[in-house]
Length: 189
Length: 189
DNA sequence: GTCGCCATGTAAACCGTTACATGATTAG
DNA sequence: CTAATCATGTAACGGTTTACATGGCGAC
Image (cartoon, rainbow over the protein chains, first blue to last red):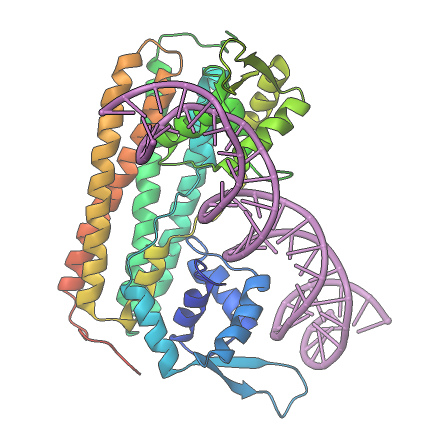
Protein backbone atom coordinates (compact mmCIF):
# COMPACT_ATOMS: atom_id res chain seq x y z
CA UNK A 1 0.00 0.00 0.00
CA UNK A 2 2.98 2.24 0.14
CA UNK A 3 4.64 3.36 -3.01
CA UNK A 4 3.06 1.95 -6.05
CA UNK A 5 -0.35 0.67 -5.18
CA UNK A 6 -3.22 2.41 -6.89
CA UNK A 7 -5.90 0.72 -4.82
CA UNK A 8 -6.07 3.81 -2.67
CA UNK A 9 -6.96 6.01 -5.61
CA UNK A 10 -9.35 3.54 -7.16
CA UNK A 11 -11.32 3.58 -3.92
CA UNK A 12 -11.13 7.35 -3.48
CA UNK A 13 -12.32 7.76 -7.03
CA UNK A 14 -15.28 5.49 -6.61
CA UNK A 15 -16.25 7.32 -3.46
CA UNK A 16 -16.56 10.54 -5.47
CA UNK A 17 -19.57 8.94 -7.14
CA UNK A 18 -21.31 8.33 -3.85
CA UNK A 19 -20.68 6.90 -0.38
CA UNK A 20 -20.10 3.18 -0.48
CA UNK A 21 -19.34 0.19 1.70
CA UNK A 22 -16.48 -2.19 1.05
CA UNK A 23 -18.92 -4.63 -0.39
CA UNK A 24 -20.39 -1.98 -2.66
CA UNK A 25 -16.93 -1.10 -3.90
CA UNK A 26 -16.16 -4.67 -4.81
CA UNK A 27 -19.43 -5.03 -6.65
CA UNK A 28 -19.12 -1.68 -8.39
CA UNK A 29 -15.67 -2.57 -9.65
CA UNK A 30 -16.88 -5.91 -10.94
CA UNK A 31 -19.86 -4.44 -12.71
CA UNK A 32 -18.41 -1.26 -14.13
CA UNK A 33 -14.64 -1.07 -14.51
CA UNK A 34 -13.75 -4.76 -14.41
CA UNK A 35 -12.48 -4.60 -17.98
CA UNK A 36 -9.59 -2.39 -16.99
CA UNK A 37 -9.38 -2.64 -13.22
CA UNK A 38 -9.72 -5.17 -10.43
CA UNK A 39 -9.45 -5.25 -6.68
CA UNK A 40 -9.84 -8.07 -4.21
CA UNK A 41 -11.26 -8.04 -0.69
CA UNK A 42 -7.80 -8.50 0.69
CA UNK A 43 -6.98 -5.08 -0.76
CA UNK A 44 -10.21 -3.23 -0.29
CA UNK A 45 -10.91 -3.66 3.41
CA UNK A 46 -7.44 -2.91 4.77
CA UNK A 47 -7.17 0.07 2.44
CA UNK A 48 -10.49 1.45 3.63
CA UNK A 49 -9.23 1.35 7.22
CA UNK A 50 -6.02 3.01 6.17
CA UNK A 51 -7.79 5.78 4.30
CA UNK A 52 -10.01 6.39 7.30
CA UNK A 53 -6.96 6.67 9.52
CA UNK A 54 -5.50 9.23 7.11
CA UNK A 55 -8.76 11.22 7.21
CA UNK A 56 -9.19 10.85 3.46
CA UNK A 57 -12.51 9.15 4.05
CA UNK A 58 -14.96 9.01 6.92
CA UNK A 59 -17.44 6.47 8.12
CA UNK A 60 -20.67 8.06 7.08
CA UNK A 61 -23.26 5.60 8.27
CA UNK A 62 -23.43 2.87 10.81
CA UNK A 63 -26.57 0.89 10.41
CA UNK A 64 -28.04 1.51 13.83
CA UNK A 65 -31.65 0.43 13.54
CA UNK A 66 -31.10 -3.04 12.13
CA UNK A 67 -28.55 -5.36 13.61
CA UNK A 68 -26.70 -6.08 10.41
CA UNK A 69 -23.20 -4.77 10.13
CA UNK A 70 -22.87 -2.26 7.36
CA UNK A 71 -20.14 0.33 7.15
CA UNK A 72 -20.42 3.12 4.64
CA UNK A 73 -17.57 5.42 3.74
CA UNK A 74 -17.58 8.90 2.23
CA UNK A 75 -14.71 10.85 0.78
CA UNK A 76 -13.52 13.96 2.62
CA UNK A 77 -12.24 17.25 1.20
CA UNK A 78 -8.76 16.04 2.03
CA UNK A 79 -9.47 12.84 0.15
CA UNK A 80 -10.54 14.79 -2.92
CA UNK A 81 -7.30 16.72 -2.84
CA UNK A 82 -5.29 13.53 -2.60
CA UNK A 83 -7.20 12.07 -5.53
CA UNK A 84 -6.68 15.18 -7.65
CA UNK A 85 -3.00 15.19 -6.81
CA UNK A 86 -2.66 11.65 -8.16
CA UNK A 87 -4.71 12.45 -11.24
CA UNK A 88 -2.35 15.26 -12.12
CA UNK A 89 0.79 13.19 -11.60
CA UNK A 90 2.54 11.53 -14.49
CA UNK A 91 1.61 7.90 -14.85
CA UNK A 92 4.10 5.26 -13.91
CA UNK A 93 4.96 3.17 -16.87
CA UNK A 94 4.09 -0.46 -16.49
CA UNK A 95 4.59 -3.36 -18.82
CA UNK A 96 1.39 -5.28 -19.16
CA UNK A 97 2.30 -8.85 -19.89
CA UNK A 98 0.41 -10.38 -22.73
CA UNK A 99 0.37 -14.15 -22.56
CA UNK A 100 -1.20 -14.57 -25.97
CA UNK A 101 1.46 -12.46 -27.65
CA UNK A 102 4.13 -14.46 -25.88
CA UNK A 103 2.68 -17.65 -27.29
CA UNK A 104 2.48 -16.22 -30.75
CA UNK A 105 6.05 -15.00 -30.50
CA UNK A 106 7.07 -18.61 -29.97
CA UNK A 107 4.71 -19.76 -32.69
CA UNK A 108 7.18 -21.81 -34.67
CA UNK A 109 7.22 -24.36 -31.88
CA UNK A 110 3.76 -25.56 -32.74
CA UNK A 111 2.08 -26.04 -36.09
CA UNK A 112 0.80 -23.19 -38.18
CA UNK A 113 -2.65 -24.65 -37.91
CA UNK A 114 -2.51 -24.45 -34.15
CA UNK A 115 -1.32 -20.86 -34.28
CA UNK A 116 -4.24 -19.98 -36.47
CA UNK A 117 -6.51 -21.61 -33.92
CA UNK A 118 -4.90 -19.48 -31.22
CA UNK A 119 -5.70 -16.38 -33.20
CA UNK A 120 -9.24 -17.50 -33.87
CA UNK A 121 -9.81 -17.99 -30.17
CA UNK A 122 -8.49 -14.57 -29.49
CA UNK A 123 -10.72 -13.09 -32.16
CA UNK A 124 -13.74 -14.82 -30.72
CA UNK A 125 -12.94 -13.57 -27.25
CA UNK A 126 -12.60 -10.01 -28.48
CA UNK A 127 -15.90 -10.21 -30.31
CA UNK A 128 -17.52 -11.19 -27.03
CA UNK A 129 -15.79 -8.31 -25.29
CA UNK A 130 -16.97 -5.95 -27.96
CA UNK A 131 -20.57 -7.02 -27.45
CA UNK A 132 -20.25 -6.52 -23.74
CA UNK A 133 -18.76 -3.05 -24.14
CA UNK A 134 -21.52 -2.09 -26.48
CA UNK A 135 -24.17 -3.16 -24.02
CA UNK A 136 -22.40 -1.19 -21.29
CA UNK A 137 -22.39 1.81 -23.59
CA UNK A 138 -26.11 1.44 -24.13
CA UNK A 139 -26.82 1.17 -20.41
CA UNK A 140 -24.79 4.33 -19.83
CA UNK A 141 -27.37 6.34 -21.78
CA UNK A 142 -29.65 6.05 -18.79
CA UNK A 143 -27.47 8.36 -16.79
CA UNK A 144 -26.69 10.87 -19.50
CA UNK A 145 -27.26 13.66 -17.01
CA UNK A 146 -24.51 12.57 -14.63
CA UNK A 147 -21.38 14.76 -14.59
CA UNK A 148 -19.44 11.51 -14.86
CA UNK A 149 -21.23 10.50 -18.04
CA UNK A 150 -18.83 11.85 -20.66
CA UNK A 151 -15.86 10.24 -18.97
CA UNK A 152 -17.51 6.90 -18.52
CA UNK A 153 -18.48 6.84 -22.16
CA UNK A 154 -14.93 7.60 -23.17
CA UNK A 155 -13.48 4.76 -21.13
CA UNK A 156 -15.93 2.27 -22.58
CA UNK A 157 -15.14 3.53 -26.05
CA UNK A 158 -11.51 2.82 -25.34
CA UNK A 159 -12.47 -0.78 -24.74
CA UNK A 160 -14.45 -0.82 -27.95
CA UNK A 161 -11.70 0.66 -30.05
CA UNK A 162 -9.03 -1.66 -28.76
CA UNK A 163 -11.26 -4.69 -29.17
CA UNK A 164 -11.96 -3.66 -32.74
CA UNK A 165 -8.28 -3.16 -33.43
CA UNK A 166 -7.52 -6.54 -31.93
CA UNK A 167 -10.14 -8.25 -34.07
CA UNK A 168 -8.79 -6.63 -37.20
CA UNK A 169 -5.28 -7.68 -36.27
CA UNK A 170 -6.38 -11.27 -35.61
CA UNK A 171 -8.02 -11.50 -39.02
CA UNK A 172 -5.02 -10.00 -40.76
CA UNK A 173 -2.68 -12.33 -38.93
CA UNK A 174 -4.72 -15.39 -39.81
CA UNK A 175 -4.60 -14.39 -43.45
CA UNK A 176 -0.87 -13.81 -43.26
CA UNK A 177 -0.29 -17.23 -41.77
CA UNK A 178 -2.57 -18.95 -44.27
CA UNK A 179 -0.74 -17.44 -47.22
CA UNK A 180 2.63 -18.08 -45.64
CA UNK A 181 4.52 -20.71 -47.65
CA UNK A 182 7.33 -21.80 -45.36
CA UNK A 183 6.86 -24.93 -43.35
CA UNK A 184 3.51 -25.87 -41.94
CA UNK A 185 4.59 -28.20 -39.24
CA UNK A 186 6.61 -28.10 -36.13
CA UNK A 187 10.25 -27.57 -36.65
CA UNK A 188 12.26 -29.53 -34.16
CA UNK A 189 15.58 -28.21 -35.27
CA UNK B 1 6.99 -20.05 -9.55
CA UNK B 2 4.31 -22.55 -8.83
CA UNK B 3 0.94 -22.25 -10.40
CA UNK B 4 0.50 -19.18 -12.46
CA UNK B 5 3.89 -17.80 -13.26
CA UNK B 6 4.71 -17.68 -16.93
CA UNK B 7 8.39 -16.92 -16.40
CA UNK B 8 9.11 -20.58 -16.95
CA UNK B 9 7.56 -20.56 -20.39
CA UNK B 10 9.04 -17.25 -21.40
CA UNK B 11 12.48 -18.70 -20.72
CA UNK B 12 11.76 -22.01 -22.40
CA UNK B 13 10.47 -20.15 -25.42
CA UNK B 14 13.52 -17.96 -25.72
CA UNK B 15 15.74 -21.01 -25.47
CA UNK B 16 14.07 -22.43 -28.58
CA UNK B 17 15.75 -19.63 -30.49
CA UNK B 18 19.19 -20.63 -29.31
CA UNK B 19 21.09 -21.54 -26.12
CA UNK B 20 21.40 -18.59 -23.81
CA UNK B 21 22.77 -17.53 -20.46
CA UNK B 22 20.72 -15.81 -17.81
CA UNK B 23 22.30 -12.56 -18.80
CA UNK B 24 21.49 -13.15 -22.45
CA UNK B 25 17.89 -13.84 -21.55
CA UNK B 26 17.55 -10.62 -19.67
CA UNK B 27 19.04 -8.65 -22.52
CA UNK B 28 17.04 -10.45 -25.16
CA UNK B 29 13.81 -9.70 -23.33
CA UNK B 30 14.73 -6.05 -22.98
CA UNK B 31 15.63 -5.66 -26.61
CA UNK B 32 12.95 -7.71 -28.28
CA UNK B 33 9.77 -8.39 -26.34
CA UNK B 34 9.97 -5.64 -23.74
CA UNK B 35 6.84 -4.01 -25.11
CA UNK B 36 4.71 -6.92 -23.99
CA UNK B 37 6.85 -8.87 -21.56
CA UNK B 38 9.36 -8.31 -18.77
CA UNK B 39 11.39 -10.39 -16.38
CA UNK B 40 13.79 -9.40 -13.63
CA UNK B 41 16.96 -11.12 -12.49
CA UNK B 42 15.20 -12.16 -9.33
CA UNK B 43 12.95 -14.30 -11.52
CA UNK B 44 15.30 -15.44 -14.22
CA UNK B 45 18.15 -17.00 -12.27
CA UNK B 46 16.10 -19.02 -9.79
CA UNK B 47 13.84 -20.19 -12.61
CA UNK B 48 16.81 -21.34 -14.66
CA UNK B 49 17.98 -23.48 -11.77
CA UNK B 50 14.50 -24.85 -11.34
CA UNK B 51 14.13 -25.72 -15.01
CA UNK B 52 17.50 -27.46 -14.93
CA UNK B 53 16.40 -29.51 -11.95
CA UNK B 54 13.27 -30.50 -13.86
CA UNK B 55 15.41 -31.55 -16.85
CA UNK B 56 13.60 -29.08 -19.10
CA UNK B 57 16.90 -27.39 -19.84
CA UNK B 58 20.54 -28.41 -19.57
CA UNK B 59 23.74 -26.54 -19.00
CA UNK B 60 25.24 -26.63 -22.43
CA UNK B 61 28.50 -24.80 -21.99
CA UNK B 62 30.79 -23.98 -19.15
CA UNK B 63 33.40 -21.54 -20.21
CA UNK B 64 36.45 -23.70 -19.67
CA UNK B 65 39.25 -21.84 -21.43
CA UNK B 66 38.80 -18.41 -19.90
CA UNK B 67 38.22 -17.93 -16.20
CA UNK B 68 35.03 -15.95 -16.46
CA UNK B 69 31.85 -17.52 -15.18
CA UNK B 70 29.41 -18.05 -17.97
CA UNK B 71 26.60 -20.55 -17.85
CA UNK B 72 24.70 -21.33 -21.00
CA UNK B 73 21.46 -23.23 -21.03
CA UNK B 74 19.80 -25.20 -23.83
CA UNK B 75 16.28 -26.52 -23.98
CA UNK B 76 15.77 -30.28 -23.89
CA UNK B 77 13.21 -32.40 -25.74
CA UNK B 78 11.27 -32.57 -22.50
CA UNK B 79 11.42 -28.79 -22.29
CA UNK B 80 9.99 -28.46 -25.77
CA UNK B 81 7.11 -30.72 -24.83
CA UNK B 82 6.41 -28.64 -21.74
CA UNK B 83 6.46 -25.46 -23.81
CA UNK B 84 4.13 -26.91 -26.42
CA UNK B 85 1.77 -28.10 -23.75
CA UNK B 86 1.49 -24.58 -22.39
CA UNK B 87 1.08 -23.09 -25.85
CA UNK B 88 -1.87 -25.35 -26.47
CA UNK B 89 -3.55 -24.60 -23.17
CA UNK B 90 -6.26 -22.01 -22.90
CA UNK B 91 -4.97 -18.71 -21.67
CA UNK B 92 -5.77 -17.64 -18.19
CA UNK B 93 -7.77 -14.48 -18.23
CA UNK B 94 -6.07 -11.59 -16.55
CA UNK B 95 -7.17 -8.04 -16.07
CA UNK B 96 -4.46 -5.67 -17.11
CA UNK B 97 -4.88 -2.59 -15.02
CA UNK B 98 -4.84 0.65 -16.92
CA UNK B 99 -3.97 3.60 -14.75
CA UNK B 100 -4.75 6.15 -17.42
CA UNK B 101 -8.23 4.79 -17.99
CA UNK B 102 -8.81 4.82 -14.26
CA UNK B 103 -7.91 8.50 -14.15
CA UNK B 104 -10.13 9.27 -17.08
CA UNK B 105 -12.99 7.37 -15.49
CA UNK B 106 -12.73 9.78 -12.56
CA UNK B 107 -12.32 12.72 -14.91
CA UNK B 108 -15.00 14.93 -13.44
CA UNK B 109 -12.84 15.44 -10.38
CA UNK B 110 -10.43 17.62 -12.29
CA UNK B 111 -11.02 20.21 -14.98
CA UNK B 112 -11.88 19.34 -18.54
CA UNK B 113 -8.73 21.09 -19.63
CA UNK B 114 -6.64 18.83 -17.49
CA UNK B 115 -8.38 15.75 -18.83
CA UNK B 116 -7.60 16.86 -22.32
CA UNK B 117 -3.98 17.23 -21.30
CA UNK B 118 -4.05 13.70 -19.96
CA UNK B 119 -5.26 12.47 -23.30
CA UNK B 120 -2.69 14.48 -25.17
CA UNK B 121 0.08 12.94 -23.09
CA UNK B 122 -1.25 9.53 -23.83
CA UNK B 123 -1.41 10.29 -27.52
CA UNK B 124 2.15 11.50 -27.51
CA UNK B 125 3.34 8.42 -25.71
CA UNK B 126 1.63 6.16 -28.20
CA UNK B 127 3.11 8.03 -31.12
CA UNK B 128 6.54 7.33 -29.65
CA UNK B 129 5.65 3.69 -29.20
CA UNK B 130 4.47 3.51 -32.76
CA UNK B 131 7.77 4.83 -34.03
CA UNK B 132 9.66 2.31 -31.96
CA UNK B 133 7.53 -0.58 -33.22
CA UNK B 134 8.07 0.51 -36.76
CA UNK B 135 11.81 0.57 -36.32
CA UNK B 136 11.66 -2.91 -34.78
CA UNK B 137 9.63 -4.06 -37.76
CA UNK B 138 12.26 -2.70 -40.09
CA UNK B 139 15.09 -4.38 -38.21
CA UNK B 140 13.21 -7.68 -38.39
CA UNK B 141 13.60 -7.69 -42.18
CA UNK B 142 17.19 -8.64 -41.66
CA UNK B 143 16.22 -12.09 -40.49
CA UNK B 144 13.47 -12.77 -42.96
CA UNK B 145 14.81 -16.29 -43.39
CA UNK B 146 14.33 -17.30 -39.76
CA UNK B 147 11.48 -19.72 -39.07
CA UNK B 148 10.50 -17.35 -36.27
CA UNK B 149 10.23 -14.41 -38.61
CA UNK B 150 6.51 -14.54 -39.45
CA UNK B 151 5.55 -14.77 -35.81
CA UNK B 152 7.82 -11.99 -34.70
CA UNK B 153 6.41 -9.73 -37.35
CA UNK B 154 2.88 -10.52 -36.24
CA UNK B 155 3.60 -9.65 -32.61
CA UNK B 156 5.15 -6.33 -33.56
CA UNK B 157 2.20 -5.60 -35.78
CA UNK B 158 -0.03 -6.17 -32.81
CA UNK B 159 1.82 -3.39 -31.04
CA UNK B 160 1.45 -1.17 -34.07
CA UNK B 161 -2.25 -1.76 -34.47
CA UNK B 162 -3.04 -1.18 -30.83
CA UNK B 163 -0.94 1.96 -30.73
CA UNK B 164 -2.75 3.26 -33.80
CA UNK B 165 -6.12 2.46 -32.28
CA UNK B 166 -5.11 4.20 -29.09
CA UNK B 167 -4.01 7.32 -30.95
CA UNK B 168 -7.26 7.45 -32.85
CA UNK B 169 -9.21 7.06 -29.65
CA UNK B 170 -7.22 9.82 -27.94
CA UNK B 171 -7.94 12.23 -30.78
CA UNK B 172 -11.62 11.34 -30.82
CA UNK B 173 -11.85 11.71 -27.06
CA UNK B 174 -10.17 15.10 -27.09
CA UNK B 175 -12.67 16.27 -29.70
CA UNK B 176 -15.54 14.92 -27.67
CA UNK B 177 -14.39 16.74 -24.57
CA UNK B 178 -13.78 19.98 -26.43
CA UNK B 179 -17.28 20.00 -27.87
CA UNK B 180 -18.82 18.94 -24.59
CA UNK B 181 -20.96 21.71 -23.16
CA UNK B 182 -21.51 20.76 -19.57
CA UNK B 183 -19.28 22.26 -16.94
CA UNK B 184 -15.66 22.93 -17.60
CA UNK B 185 -14.38 23.11 -14.13
CA UNK B 186 -14.05 20.93 -11.13
CA UNK B 187 -17.28 19.99 -9.55
CA UNK B 188 -16.95 19.78 -5.81
CA UNK B 189 -20.46 18.60 -5.13
C1' DG C 1 -33.68 -25.35 8.26
C1' DT C 2 -30.81 -24.64 4.85
C1' DC C 3 -29.18 -22.38 0.86
C1' DG C 4 -27.60 -18.42 -1.13
C1' DC C 5 -26.50 -13.82 -0.84
C1' DC C 6 -25.03 -9.76 2.06
C1' DA C 7 -21.09 -8.16 4.48
C1' DT C 8 -16.60 -7.73 6.81
C1' DG C 9 -12.36 -9.15 7.42
C1' DT C 10 -7.61 -11.84 7.83
C1' DA C 11 -3.61 -15.11 6.99
C1' DA C 12 -0.92 -17.29 3.99
C1' DA C 13 0.86 -17.98 -0.36
C1' DC C 14 2.49 -16.31 -4.42
C1' DC C 15 4.55 -13.47 -7.86
C1' DG C 16 7.49 -10.01 -9.00
C1' DT C 17 10.77 -6.04 -8.51
C1' DT C 18 14.43 -3.60 -6.26
C1' DA C 19 18.56 -3.27 -4.45
C1' DC C 20 22.41 -5.09 -3.35
C1' DA C 21 26.70 -8.30 -3.26
C1' DT C 22 30.32 -10.22 -5.80
C1' DG C 23 33.78 -10.35 -9.04
C1' DA C 24 35.77 -10.66 -13.90
C1' DT C 25 36.75 -8.30 -18.18
C1' DT C 26 37.30 -4.51 -21.32
C1' DA C 27 37.82 0.28 -23.02
C1' DG C 28 39.55 4.74 -22.17
C1' DC D 1 43.56 3.06 -12.84
C1' DT D 2 38.92 3.51 -13.33
C1' DA D 3 34.58 3.21 -15.17
C1' DA D 4 31.41 0.59 -17.67
C1' DT D 5 29.78 -3.62 -18.88
C1' DC D 6 29.54 -8.64 -18.35
C1' DA D 7 27.66 -12.03 -15.38
C1' DT D 8 25.47 -14.53 -11.54
C1' DG D 9 22.92 -14.50 -7.84
C1' DT D 10 20.10 -13.47 -3.27
C1' DA D 11 17.35 -11.10 0.41
C1' DA D 12 13.97 -8.17 1.46
C1' DC D 13 10.09 -5.95 0.45
C1' DG D 14 5.65 -5.01 -1.56
C1' DG D 15 1.37 -5.80 -3.80
C1' DT D 16 -2.23 -8.96 -4.94
C1' DT D 17 -5.01 -12.94 -4.88
C1' DT D 18 -6.92 -16.97 -2.65
C1' DA D 19 -9.08 -19.15 0.64
C1' DC D 20 -11.03 -19.11 4.58
C1' DA D 21 -13.68 -17.51 8.95
C1' DT D 22 -17.62 -15.33 10.70
C1' DG D 23 -22.26 -14.27 10.97
C1' DG D 24 -26.85 -11.90 9.65
C1' DC D 25 -30.67 -12.02 6.57
C1' DG D 26 -34.28 -13.57 3.28
C1' DA D 27 -36.58 -17.01 0.50
C1' DC D 28 -38.40 -21.48 -0.15
